[in-house]
Length: 115
Length: 115
Image (cartoon, rainbow over all chains, first blue to last red; front, side, top):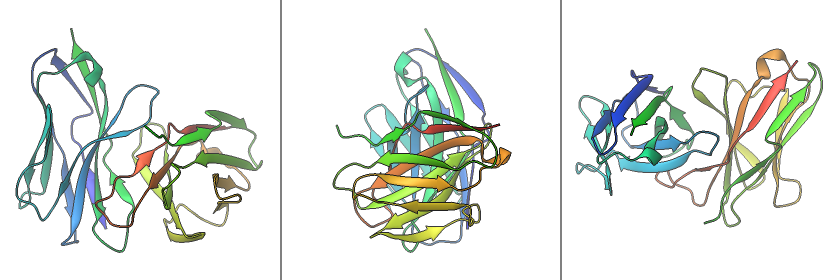
């Protein structure tokens, strides 16, 4: 079984600044994947970034990067140069590597970007 | 870019009535999922579907729920006799390939309100 915890229900950031969203997880799997999804208001969830647990190097996608601490079971998302369009709910999720493809989600963090 | 679509966007029904929620997957995707999110709670996995069969289901997915892909395009979730606690956002997701690393693409959701 997998669990995902996001301890920050809401966060805010000034436009052009950097913000970090926290996520911790627990899993008994040795092979698993971690994801950050973004859900803008009234829009579908879209994948922001993903990390394979077997990779030590932190994933990056343009302004988005993760800090993956496997031993601590931590997977935080850093958004650099925040833009107004980054305002959304952000969900951290995990998925086992084999045998089960269901995503396990955290409760989400609502990010506001202040102009 | 191809998107997952869902209809209706909002469904209001009386307790005890049957509802069918529809999803049109991305055309070359082979794996299909339903998730739900009760207001204020986590997104929860309901069921996964591949090759016209349920491959995995959660405890939530009891005998009142069923899924099918009747015409090779739509993927439907049926709730036979709705309860008040079925009120939630229902998300369809699709995935092209097997494997934990492949991205699940989400639809915009159907908000189900049971009165």
